Image 1 (tube, rainbow, N blue to C red):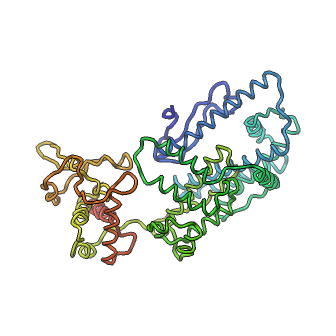
Image 2: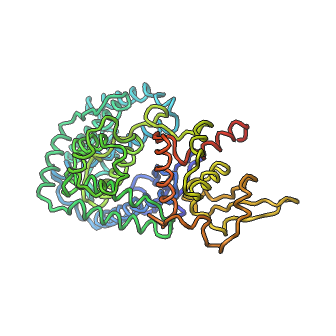
Image 3: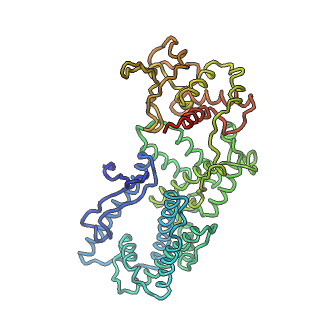
Length: 502
């Protein structure tokens, strides 16, 4: 069912959810089609993000049907209170921030160099809306107010004073959100919203949260991971699950397993600052990975360099997704506190890609070569194929194949266990690897290098090989994280680029 709702706009790499609105609720819903960017290039991840949105849509449409049925029968909605309006205003502020923030991020992703373009036009439009509100013109907000009220099952005459009160409150918090996003667009750091309604709504929501009995953070994470694993059923095993659980463990210990509803932006910022200053290599140690957050900070915190921007982005993006999932299930509400922590990646500044080995460095690596012959052979295969470490370590004799093209016999490795669809390919075997082709073959499922241990997710041999190579290159004096086994792949791509092959 979900397949027909996933689409991509021409020229866009991101998947989009596009759902036709049932005819019986189109008027109440305010549109004939619901569209939302899923901000994912990977289709499976897009489907995972789309499922809860679709479920919420169906629930909302069912509520509209019940509301319209009650209205037709002549029944009236219960009297709406200021507390109701404050809760709706609080949620509307968060939704507006999310929408405006995503548009700001999309402008940068689509055109980093020109992302400032149009900022003056946006400022003029925002000034016009602010002036309308200041002059008491609520025309623009009538439709918004009607939709927000209907989602809560409230049908109020637009001429009613309660409707006008709601319109003024909704307009104020929406403009507060848009003004904050505009100030972020201009480069202001952590701008604060200016709204009396939002301040009162925050106090009300904090009081209500204090009276509510919420589930512990760890219980919420367990529920989230069960749903996440179910959505990925049948997909290739990766280390993504372990990465998510590691992030959730860190924040859960920082947060002392309290309900997620209480997390505020200042709490997320404090966690971010402490996490950023952890030793970049802490996660490589099994002993350190088992430490509690407080002990980990004592052992590895407050470092001069700390974690890379890409690592920090992944951690905060994981927590941001957890909040979004929890909010859809009423475990939290309001602005996502894990937003606004995404660091723009700039090559050479906060991102340092792998670099190819230079000739003098290769001489050091191979004079003499590693004592383990399997590691030496895999290094040579990498240099003549550009294959990744796990692809090489997992090679079986059944993947070493031959085909005839014209009158020429071509020997190749068939890679069919890649992480993405694009990674499934045939890799020609260079003549310099003839020693491997001539070797006595084992069974189709037998690995070319059987002495490597199978470890980690999916029982792969790459982790063992990677650890052996890392230890070897450190002993040869190469400590840079830009020079790794993956650098052999860079050697191949550099040769291809210099040869002018596109």
